[in-house]
Length: 171
Image (cartoon, rainbow, N blue to C red; front, side, top):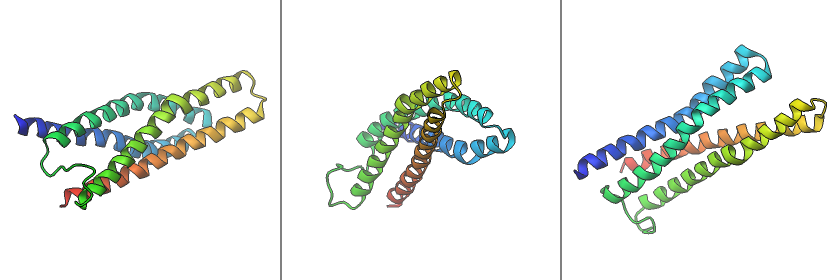
């Protein structure tokens, strides 16, 4: 039974990783550039990206929950898993760094979704009511660029986590 639970947990852990990091990869490197090229209109690109983000965010949220749950199960049942504070094992600090990076990714994800996104939406709504407010337009553009940069940071962190996972798996 332990083998089935552990195997299923590893599978779901990897699947959630693919969905989350793979989704970020697809959005940044495939969908966004394609939308910018083919739509050629910033409002249309924004509308498309809002739709894609609305569909992707719940998948990312579920993936985060699955990663946490399966991570706990893997940590409990998995062999070769050590106490994160036993720094005499040279793999343990790598795992600690990996989990710090994942925590940072989760914080960025929820900051963008729960705080930054609604703020951009509220300012955009105000802008659509009074399009002559150039200061508001500048602020919306700045926040949108900041949000996109956070997604890029999450991709870089995610790739670093995958690399560290490869390092730990090579032992």
